[in-house]
Image 1 (cartoon, rainbow, N blue to C red):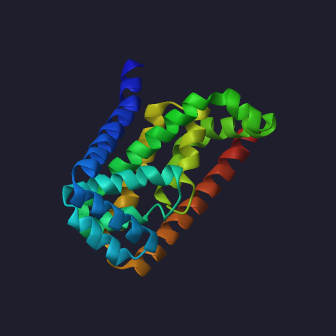
Image 2: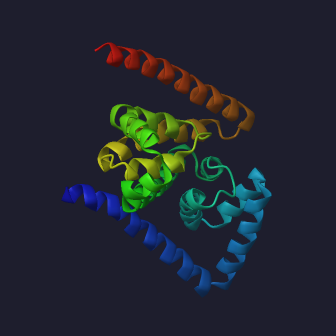
Length: 230
C-alpha cells in the first residue's frame, strides 16, 4: 500500500519540479521568456512544422515543454492530444520521443487518477444516477483494465475522463497505470515511426483505434452473454 501511494504521488512531485524549473527559467532568462511567448503563439496556429522548429530551439527544455503540454491538455483542450507526441517524434527521434510521450501521459494520467480519488465516489454520486454508477462500477470491475488500454491506444477517445473515473471509482492505481502504459507505448511508437507522414499516421491511428474498439466490443458482448447464462 505504501509503495502504491509512493508511485502515485511521485507524479505530483515530478510534475511540480518540472513546473518550478520551467517558471524559474521563464522569469530568470529574458530570451527564454521571449521564446516561450513566441512558442505559445505558434502552438495556437496549429502549424506542425512551425511548432517543431520552435521546440527544437529549446533543446532539452523542449522535451520538458512537450511533457507539460501533455499534462496541460488534460485541463485545457487547446490542441489535439496527439500533437505534442508528433512534435516530439519530429524533433527528438524515435526512442527519445517514445520516452517523452510516455512520461507525459504517465504524469497526466496519474494526476487525473489522484484528482478522481480525491473527488471520491460520494461526489460522483451527486452527478450520476445510481443505476448509471452501478453500470460504471461493473464496467471498471470487470473490464476496466482493457477498457483503459483501448482508450489509451486511440487518441480520439477521451483519455482524461477515464483517468478521473478510474480514480473516483477506486480502481487500484497499479492496475490503472499498467493499463495506461500498455496502451500508450504502442501509440507513442506508432506516432514516432510515422510522424513524418501525417496522412498515413492518421489513417493508421483510425484503423488501430477503430479495429481495437470493434474487437473489444465483440469480446464484451460474448463475455456478457456468458455471465448472464451463468
